Structures are given as C-alpha cells and as structure tokens.
Image (tube, rainbow, N blue to C red; front, side, top):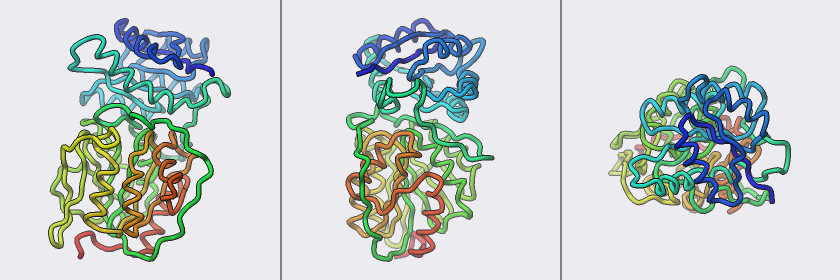
Amino acid sequence: MSRIRVLVVDDSVVIRRLVSDALAQDPAIEVVGVAANGRLALAKVEQLAPDAVTMDVEMPEMNGIEAVRALRKAGHRMPIIMFSTLTERGAGATLDALAAGATDYVTKPSNVGSVQESMDRVAHDLVPRLHALVPNPGGGPRGSARLLPRQPGLRPPAAPAAHATGPAGPGAGQVVPRIVSTLPAPAPHVVRAVVVGSSTGGPEALSRVLSGLTAPPPVPVLVVQHMPPVFTRQLAARLDRLGPATVVESAGEEELRPGHVYIAPGDRHLELQRTGQSVRTLLTDGPPVNYCRPSVDVMFRSAVRALGGELLAIVLTGMGMDGKAGCDDVVRAGGTVLVQDERTSVVWGMPGAVAHAGLAHGIVPLDQVAPAIERTLATAGAGRAVQA
C-alpha cells in the first residue's frame, strides 16, 4: 500500500522536526520534504508532488495564507492542513488561510510538559486527518484530493476545523459503504428547530447553507461545529455576514428566537433545556462524547428531550461518527434527518455514518441543503420553539 507523502512547512527548525518525528510514528505516512517558508514550499510542491501539506501560518518571505492562495491558484488540490496557535490572532489568521483554500487545521501544542508529549499531541491531531483526507494515496494524480466547488460570488469559507478537545478519535476517516438507502418520508410534523452538526469542511458547508437561505428561517437553528474556543466566536461573526439569519456564538441561557443561528462555543456542550413554555440554550462541561466537546450527539439528544420529534436534523461533512446516535433519537421521535452527500463532502464520515445506518430521510448535495431546509419547513409547518 502506498504511503501518504507529506511536505512539512514551518519557519521553525524545532517545529519542523517535531512534526516530522510525530508523523514518522505512523508507518503509513512518509515525510518527503520540509520547507522554511511559503516560497520554498511552492518549489517543493512542484518538485515532490506530495499527497498533503502541513503549513505554518506566520512565516517570513511568504506566509501560510499567501502560500495557500498561490498553491490553489496554480491548480494544486492536495489537502493543506494549517498548523496554528490557539490565540485570537492565530484563530483569525487560520480562518483567513482556510478562506484562501486550506482544507483543515490543527493547533500547536501548548502547556505540555515534554517534547514527547508535544509529539504525541501532534500525532494525535494530524494522523487521523491525513488518513481521512488522503484515503487513497498513490491511487491517482498527486494532489487530487476533493475540494468543495466554489459558488460564484461567494466569499470563501471560514475554518474547516478540529474539535475542541482532541483528535477525531476512532472512526475518523472510516470507509463507509457507498450503497445506502434512505428512510421514507416521516409522518407530517411541525418543525420547531433546525439542528446541525458538522466537522472537517463544516464551516465552508455552513457558509454555503446560510448564504443559500432566501430569508431568515422561521425557527431557530442550532449548530455544533467541532472547533476550539476562540475559533467558534470568530466563525460565528464571519457566518453572520453571509446570509439573512443572525448568527451568534451561544452564551447560554438564551431563549430561542426564530431567524437566529446559535453556534456551540468551543469546549462546551450546547444543549436545549425546556422549562414550561420556554426553551433555552444550556452550556455544559460534561465529558467529551465521540471524543468531541461540543458534541453533535449531545446537542441532538437534548433537542429531542426538549422538543420531541418537532425537529429537522442536518449532518454535514466531517470526520468520525458524531451525530449518528443523535439522529437515531430524532428518527425515533418522529423528526426529519437530512445529510450531505459524499460527492460534496470533504470527508463523508459523519453524514456517511448516518446514511449507512439507515437514519437519513434524504441525502442531498451541498448546494441543495438550504433549499431542502426551506422546503421542509414550508411543507411540515414551522412553529415557534417556545410553544407547547
């Protein structure tokens, strides 16, 4: 079996060695070269044709954002994983890099006690992503990884990204059989909230969905996107500028309002809590579920407890299986489940797991998700989440 050939780009000799040694722990991955800045990286890509690139954000001569933009302009489509710092500045720069065409990112280890711990953390975060993003190394032209097609006139998206508490864990990048069947349409029901889960490639998918809405949704929308703190706040601000809905990072204790999108903050579970006629957001610090906090399953299941089957659940691109158990609860309660199709997903892990389990009422391409939401709400009937 061919190994995944990786180019490591960072201006720090220490970080280049750290990443190279971390990746060397996996016999299926080969570091074929290193580069100290973006300009050198461009030449190395042409010379080595790697399957994937890890890219520092801030570098002299040509930074990571400029390098990503130049690589994409030159037609290179291999996955580019940004290596960023968990700071406001680092988050902003990483979102800019992802908007320029990067595929994913991981954060540099911090507050660790030893070089070995740092190496283990990097391997823990990078290795599952490389296997998910390069499922068939050497099986086609180098750098032929799938990228979501751009829509004319749309600003490129913010941050396809990692979850807050660690790597994707077991199941990331799993092979999901392509032959799946959908459930028959559920019995007619009111929809009082739309709940959405996404991970790798999710912010781009979210930007397409929210910008594709023709009007503010008549019900609240709740989103779990696997990202760390700081990043989710900036993601919410960027998504708020894209479409007719009002997008905020949830602060907890908000009474749900139609036309509003509530993004789960990094490292907090987002749940719904019903008290009499009122349904409010609730942020909790429970253990990770599916190796993730926030977790899609936690949010979906709490929505079922609060609203029964009066839900439309959407699962977009992402690694792992987070959301499958929650979709099972939604279906059992009589709600509706839609998932993004494989062709338009960066990684068909989460939506593929739901589809393969027979829990999806529809499998739709990304550009049809917003119309499907509006069609479902119009057909099923939308009601205020606070009503009994």
